Length: 206
Length: 114
Image 1 (tube, chains in turn purple, orange):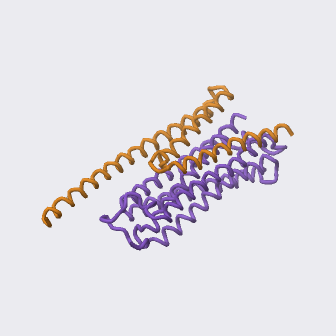
Image 2: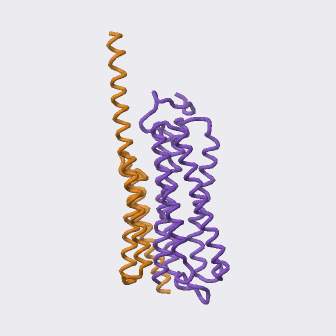
């Protein structure tokens, strides 16, 4: 059977994302990539934890951070993680329209998160907290900005994936792609859990 | 013979389909429960800092523990690490987490001692 052929309810495999060798390879390779990403973010977290109190004469984290804004951003990202898992459930049931719907909700929530982060960064720059203002500034924008760049990349990824496959249904070729995007999106949320804990909440207690 | 073939096969197929639907229903329930749990963990973590009622040193350990629990929900339920056929992914992530912990500790240590 051709991997690009639209699957029907009759020939739908139990695990369409791992039904081909290519799908299996992508699945394993992506998990190893996520293990590597964990280490990459660890370097940024370690640096931030070492430098977070070195703010020179600029504002400290305790003065800058606004918890209600961070809480709202957290809820947006957490909900988008749930909607992407709903999309994967639709994938397993061969419901392509429902999959597209849930991924669009995921995309919109991701864009909402990005909007909040951009607003937050602009506000900080006005307060005198910039990338070059202190070691705290450099470490903060490297860590939080790198996570934001992951969210931005994710929104571009799902947009192109949806557009390219809009009328193709679910196939053995695109099922692994949808599945891996959902894994990536959950991982971005995992990193955010540590950012709101280590950067924002721990920043408030000094 | 042909008759026999025609009557049994759809029943078997339907039976499998019902089982698969039930499994998916169960999975959806797990996802919803874990979502509610994660929302609660987040609210508790924010409240611990916001309310200013517990000591700072305890609050830090407390919210870090909540973060680890929440990540466990993400990895095992939403990213399906609890499902069959995830042995290699678990090894990949576990080694990543191990190196990550060493990295954080050594970077903090290097900056602290310099």
